[in-house]
Length: 307
Ligand code: CP
Image (cartoon, rainbow, N blue to C red; front, side, top):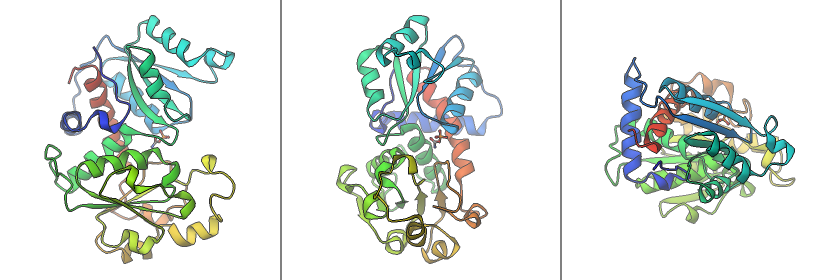
């Protein structure tokens, strides 16, 4: 029986340790054994993606499995076939698991309730993006030399998550996971883009003030302004956003001891980050993609119980 991964809470605490251990091995290894030979994964991508889709597709193929992409516009969903019938078609064709990217919050949970197929959430609306957050936590643990097997692995670490928190599935998954590991999380953004910190855990707070929000934190996690999800009036203007929340060299210097600047991608260059941040040695977005690729390989092994 395969396992699903719909929320970060599905891997806390044991799965996270297993996935992190395996991702670490894969990152250190030049040779990857085809541990998933004979398996077939379907990527049901109902919303645009570059990183998540490529990471899962290459993960499946590098491990010896097949990967088929089902996109909304080129599948029978565009002819009116329901998601439930689409899922049943994928199962009956002989696929072992579905990776779903959806603009609708909750669709992965719904799929899981309809089928015995393993479901992996590749990002659903504004709800969760668990595999992104798991990879990012693995990177942070490696950088700060924290043992994810410990209940309080992130005790004493502080992470500021800055920007469009309200619409960010990554922010939800990451804040929940860091809080579970006993780390401190500060959500920073304008009132129309913040979320109630109590929804994530007791160590999560929120502020509209960028300077105090990032002061003394160990990692700054910048979010993309999701213009496609913002209703009119949810933010005052691009100019005032950049003035108050854009990360630039001066702000980074003022923040104190920040060691990592992270961003899940894609970046709106010049909106949430300036170009000079890309050149800073603390900016690790490319490393997030590398760790994310290894994490997706470990996730596919974990859901199919071959880890
Ligand atoms: N971070 C992330 O999910 O990127 P994509 O939308 O390109 O997959």
